[in-house]
Length: 168
Ligand code: SF4
Image 1 (cartoon, protein in one colour):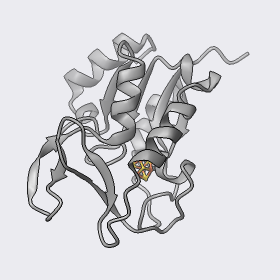
Image 2 (image 1 turned 30 degrees about the vertical axis):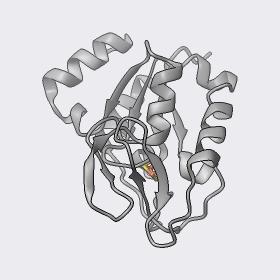
Image 3 (image 1 turned 90 degrees about the horizontal axis):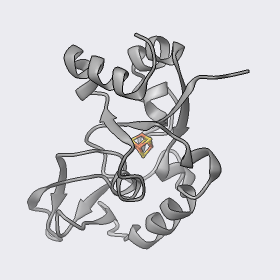
């Protein structure tokens, strides 16, 4: 029986080729070291919401507290589509028992903090949280949330591992 603690993760961090350019962002520590102790539940919001690989890149636009998700070249607004998909996804049983989630930093869909938010004309307007990550944190305010950059800090990593309750 698998008793590992279940933690969500942005799929590209496990090496899945789901990024807009067809690439991945494999994080060896997360996949091969921490992966010994947790059961990763991989999610790529953009692909699971029905977007292709490769695809046009997108960005956050508008109010940094409540930005819209918009494709950069065509201006196609994905906000409603991603909102609906995110809410449905987070109702799935496999999502409701996650102890936490490790998100890909800097992504307009997955970034935890400091994600660039632009004005409609393309000027930097501020920084905020990726769209799916924001919906996740709102729905599961007690879940532990981190990104792969934060987990490179050994002190922070130890704290995170202690909090999710697995062995180092
Ligand atoms: S950052 Fe998120 S949306 Fe982008 S490829 Fe990775 S999992 Fe998919």
